[in-house]
Image (tube, rainbow, N blue to C red; front, side, top):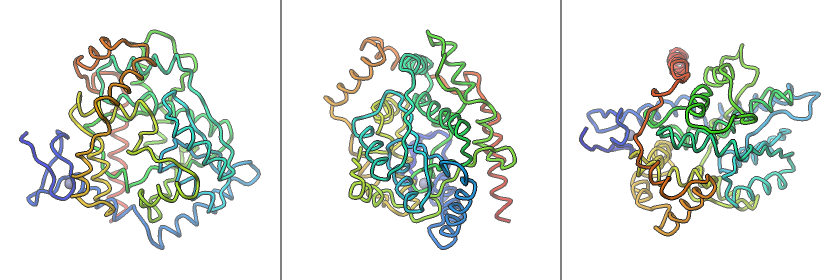
Length: 375
Ligand SMILES: [Zn+2]
């Protein structure tokens, strides 16, 4: 496919499945604008949704210590949601999963935020030997989504803790403003426990004794969001209020002593290297492109600003070398082994056992339900 870039957002042919209309608008921003119009409610209706959610959480939380759980990565979305939850008067259990890659800033942010807001904070530390084994297995697998081990552990622990504490509601920082665009061809969902186990069985060296793995039913409940079957209700209130990530960062810095990381998801040392170096260099796409395109669709970044921001590299040659050395040292890899892994044949999620069929089916059903609701 000859190179082409959208004339409205900055998505381009680095997504092999992208399509363009006669105006040069891509399928991603066209779909995202439609979804934003229906599901992003920075208005009275959204405010009403939040009031109803808060009332429901308080009612269901009666007799318990907490109204809901909030998974805190230390990034701007979950941190801002925690700050808003205090405003709403919710009793929240903050939960952080430490997969061994936290930056100093993320550790600071998670702890400072909990202290300033007066919320209980539970930190679950993943056994490092097992985390390392799964991470190296993913590097050896040739798959592009090397963040699966961190993402999977985060969600799996949250599922388990909700059950343990009898919590029925989960506040998620997921939002359309910064995440309305992410091409399906750029990776497979991290919640696929079957794929994680298959990759580890093939390339891992040590048995997984404590590494949290998501069950099929928890995965189905999360993607399906079927009320009758869902013990845990996932709420995404950032879609029901005006949400500007740049203003949110400033608010957190001023009110909570929060420290900015730079880019989305850079609270993890591995994710920073993965998103800014491994994905563009080895797999030929840059997630910043989707993130900035989402911000364009949300109207909080112009296309020119996004094009300009794409020119800035997160690394100098020296800092890149430092981060590669850091990751190699933690994973127990030599530089030669790292270079060899970076040149190994690429694989796709379809090359390993997965729940992809069911996940895609759930997505299609949700799309159909969205269309049906609009009628
Ligand atoms: Zn577009």
